[in-house]
Image (cartoon, rainbow, N blue to C red; front, side):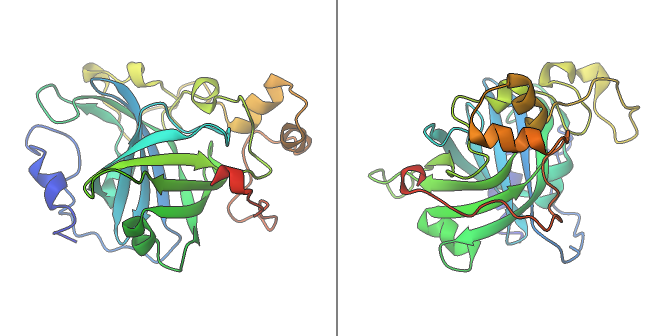
Length: 253
């Protein structure tokens, strides 16, 4: 574990930044692996997409954020592994430190590995993995695919939505649901004088879910009709007995 986080730890000064060092030694309770997407206003706004694999958070920086449109292939730059504790980080990375800027937890939940093979760590090393998300904004099936034709050290990947029942052409989830799922604040609302704390009183603004956004949009696509019929303000629970369709088209791979 220590070796996996060596790069992460060398890039940060933990006497200056509130980010977790990953040296806590906290034992993990067996359960489904988590994912988190952190909206990060650094030198450029981007979304840090993280999947828990082998005890760490495998991480990709997605400049434009996830898209529910299978035709839209989002560039995802693979970055250093982060400690599991980073999944709960929301606050400010001070000026002068790596990645300085504001961070909010844009989405979080659990995830399931689909293919190829039976080991997600091996799939990452080989440059392709498909998975199912159970979040508050992101759910159903997605894929991360490494771009070929680059050098062996290339870190360029694509984040793609599979063609399933929740695929929605033309829908921008980052615009429709911009707020933190923890504090209901947008990234510019997190400032030096108001660092996020777990005991902060809840604000009245409610983070919009994808189901809310799809209903308000009023489009007539079949996938949006199905979401509207559920009459719910949140996506399906990971514990739901009804699983999303596992159909995938070749065009979305």
